[in-house]
Structure formats: structure tokens, C-alpha cells
Amino acid sequence: MEDDRGRHHAKPKPESKTRLHGRRGPPLARWHDPSSNLPGRGFPGLAILAVAGLLVLLPAALAAEARWWKGNLHTHSLWSDGDDFPESIAAWYKDHGYHFLALSDHNRMLEGEQWVTGSMKNHFPEALEKNRRRFGGDWLVQRTLQGTNQYQLKTLAEFRGLLEQPGRFLMIPSKEITSGHLSFPVHINATNLRRKIPAQGDTNVLDVMQRGVDAVLEQRRQTGQPMFPHINHPNFGWGITAEDLMQVRGERFFEVYNGNPAVHNVGDTVHAGMERMWDIVLARRLGKLDLPPMHGLAVDDFHHYHRHGSDQSNQGRGWVMVRSEQLDAPSLVAALESGDFYGSSGVSLRRLERTGNTMRVEVEAEPGVNYTIRFVGTRRGFDATRSPVMSAKGEPIRATWRYSHRIGETLAVSVGPRARYTARGGELYVRAVVTSSERIANPSRKGETAAAWIQPWQPR
Ligand SMILES: [Zn+2]
Ligand SMILES: [Zn+2]
Image (tube, rainbow, N blue to C red):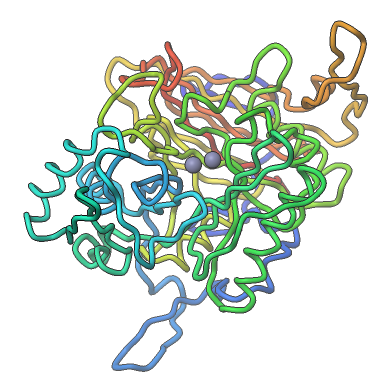
């Protein structure tokens, strides 16, 4: 382990000469991915080019350079409980440097006919005024019903063409499958979905989750479209424990960071936070359950455009940076599934490489900001003891169990914008988290500082 000033913290092994993945960084594909037989995975090492209506396969080296694309996969609009028009929200993201956006309304795809009445929505006059300024006074269809003004919401098909630009901005169809068991919410986003999937029901949280995941993967098989489910905000309503999450089959994603202040990203004295849950899930899936790793997404879960504050679900708090050659849904899905992305709440990376037995991270450093890069992992043969959390009356509480601190231990820490970790052998996985001294301007939790979450990697 070497920090940015070249100091060694542990004796490194000689670096492998083998570059496993060239310039795209390695996929975490040592594990058999159950979705790898699904359509839309592409052709490793080959790029597809459409020339005069013919599909041509080129060696990847001749194709476009991979680059980072910024996007948000979790957003709400007036189609459900967001407070702005979908096209206005998409315009905000495009104007603020995002390259892709998934509008994921609760149990709604942005299709069919839906009317909104201003009096039923907070801040509707501001939303309407803003929409008219951007899209013109005759853009929205209006009607009067029983003396009330109503406005018809635009479908994704109607407005995406106004905003999408090849290589600049992409809309991805989505929805938040909003289910639950008893009082426990189970919300699953389906990215690049083609047909609506209804809310799911079952007799426990795990089975509700599994049904939602299975439904998305089944639609992927049927349609041939690359799409994926991701588990939203596990700690919202304390709905999903690490024990639930670790057992879901076919699921490769959850939200390690969600910008909604109601979702308890950092947990509390009883409930584990998202990063702790991530390590428990990874250690158990890779070390005990024979299941592939889960990746951690950062998202906005935007609902509130018009009032800002730490009690509001505002835009611009969490996003993903995805490394891909093309800005299209199949390329982004493939890159996300290979773990070639990071989640961010304000930290950008200049370099991210995971080759052979070495991970290198370099931050796009801002002047006057301090960075700490922490490599976190779990080693084979970890202490697997665990116990439930008990109430004052001595009864088990429905919360993530307590596990050994050998799960998710800090393997190395480096102060500064650059760091390298060389595997010592025996790591089940290694992930990296970058924290910074930069205070977030409009945080979901007071005092929050910008961070980045790099996906788990299984060193060779
Ligand atoms: Zn939700
Ligand atoms: Zn949501």
C-alpha cells in the first residue's frame, strides 16, 4: 500500500504484469454473473458499429475511447409524488452536466394519460410558470373539469426528443416498483424497463424483493432489452436488513447513498448504516452464500424541486459516474453490471484502475479540499460469528445483526488525492471509499461532506 507521497503502509506484493481489462478497467467478472446469459451483454473485446445499415464488428481497440458519463437513476415527477413536470426535471439535469436520467415514478411508467390539478400539488404555480418559460405557453394541454383547471402530463415518448442529444443526454425508461410487507417498504427501481411491472406482495420482505427482481429479469429475457433491478434505500422505514439483502438472487445493485433525508443512509444506534450493510452483504455473499457481489449506487431520489433544505428530497445530491464508450442504455447497463462505475455525492475521480492485484484511485482534486482514500475489505476465513440486536426487554429486534469487525475492515488508508492498494492475498473483495473535507452545499444530513464509493473488486 502506497499513499500519494509514496509512503508504504504495508509490504506490497510485486504488481502483476497482466492487464486484465485494458483501458476500461476490469470488470468484476471473476464471478459467474447469472445475468450474463441474458440478452444485451455485448461482445467482450468487440465493438459494434452500424455502417450503411450493416452491423460491423470491430476490435474494441479501434472503437471509441471509454469515458465517464454522469447520471441519476432515481427521480420522481408529477407522475407520482414529485413536485415538478418530468420534462422540467429532465431539463434541470441536462443543464447541470448530467448525461443520463431515469425518471422512476412510483408504480408508474411515463405513458398513457394522466392529468394533474394544481390545487392538489404543492408549488404547482411555480412549476407551471417554469414549464411555460422553458417549453412555451402552448406546450401543455389544459382542460377545465368541474370548474377546475387540469394539465395533461407529457409522456416520456412526447418529451424525450426535446432534450435527448446523441453523446450528450439520454433518458432511460424506469419506474420504482413500490411494494412492501406489513409496514416495511420494499422499493425496487427497474432501469431501462419496457413494460409496467405491478407492485409485488408476499409473506415476508425477502420474498417481496425476490418477486420484484425476478419480474424485471423475466422481462429482460422476454424483451431482449438489457435492464436491471436495483434495491432502493434499504433503511427507509427500516424495511430491509442486510440479512434480507444478502439473500436476493439475481440482484446486483442497491443504493449505498440516497439523497432523500428520510432514508437513514448512516443508520442509527440500532440499525446498521448502508456501508456497514454493504460489507456484511459482500462478505456473506462471497464467503458463505456462493452469490455474486452487490454494487453500490448513489442516487438523488429527487422529489422536491421548489424548496431546498435538509428536510427535502432535492436534486443533485447523489449520482453515478459510469465508464462506457457509448452513451446508450445497453452500454451503460453493461458497464454498471461489470462494476465499472462509482457513486458520488461530490467527489470526482481522475483515475480508477483495477488490474491484476492492484487498485489505483486518483481524485480530481479541488483546491483547498483534503481527501482520504480508504480501502475496505473482508478476508477469507473471517470471523463469522453474529448475533441479533436485542431490545431492552431481551427480545430480538428486526434489524441487521451484529457481525465481527473483521467484516469490512480497513485494509489501508491514504491521506491525499492518490492511492494504490496491492492485494496481499486472501481478500474476498476490496472496495474503496473516498471522503473529503468539502461540505455539501445542500446536504440531506447536516454536516455531510462529499464522498465517492468505488465498487468491490476481487483481486486475483
Ligand atoms: Zn422509494
Ligand atoms: Zn423514490
